[in-house]
Image (cartoon, rainbow, N blue to C red; front, side, top):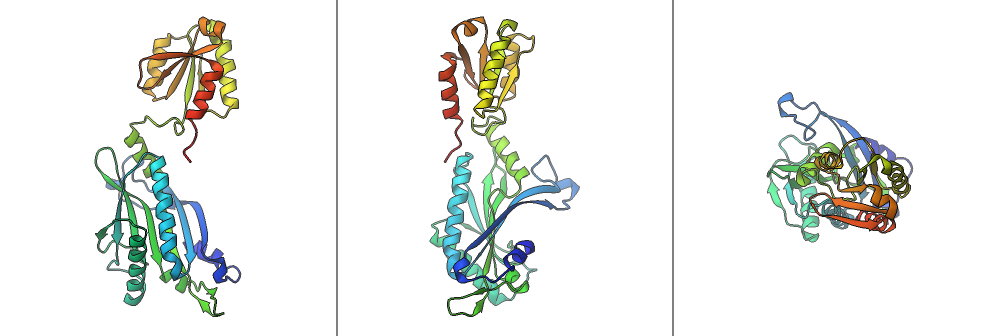
Length: 303
């Protein structure tokens, strides 16, 4: 956070420059008690999508709405249609006067209400420098995890002497909004894996399709298809091992590969592929150009 203030402080800023938004993927280290760590849900070293917005007091409401809309869109694209918002106010140990805290709490609460977002109170759980909104996801087994956050900070800009020139020509203090959408990347990936039981949508799957040969005579055709899929930026794996096709299908299905293309001598002759989709025992045969077009359409990232 102080680093972004120092970047902001390079040169004179005008009210016309605000809001000014900065973002980074920052490596963080936190000495968590050994008993609290498990898997990738809580770790001592993690990456955070850290960002800060420098704005005027009048812009807090609009920036809050923009952020909540952005977070809602990203969560929805990743399959989380619902989340909870908690409003965390001043903790016992804090920086800044009660007057500044009351100002920050009112600004954030009014902005959240103006954005049309319902929230529940979380007394005493704010950051030491300002109140915050916590965006909480519930995982597949009912546990709540704080992921996104939005914090209003009047303290740090004052301590590090951040200013801008207002419309009246006088120097003023900007407000600093701390925000993260995913929070800890590791934690969010863990929640995502559990929510989908590893069965990711096609656009998100690490490997989108496997090309498995049925007989060795189809290996060259399988390699040809592999190259064409790779050229179209699809994440593909080639399996031409000397194993039975049922063995290959079972293995890749257990690994949650969304699509398997099985190719044998008949497919080589007809220039087709036999398609098997995860969770569906039925197969379908298509010409390779048609299969490629369908796969590319299905793998488009949500917009």
